[in-house]
Image 1 (cartoon, rainbow, N blue to C red):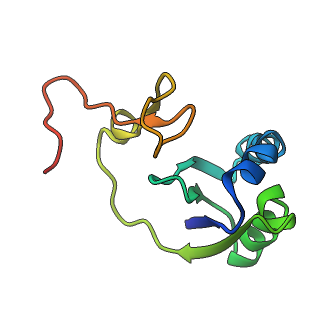
Image 2: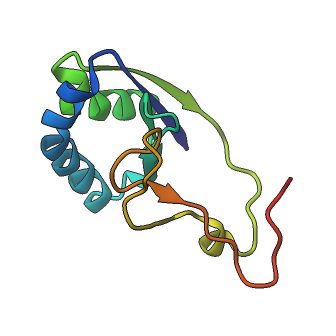
Length: 123
């Protein structure tokens, strides 16, 4: 498994202008089975993608196709790890999209944490 850590190197106006193309890129790689979950960092200075592939080289080749990267709007770092454990209720713990946030650090369409009923947030 891989963590792709994108860091913006351009103003947010340039990022927003390339967002539609970036979303097309994401959808393509979700459909191919390479991307598992993704989202913006908070504060909004980049993004994270959890990905799977047979090699680091495959992931790096995919990330170079991201319009943010190919247009020089973001740099990336790939972290490889071997998943050895997971929560039984991992699907319930994954963050879900919410309505647009009024918090300017999160940006439009920010993600919020959903805590399953009867479970407390970690402190």
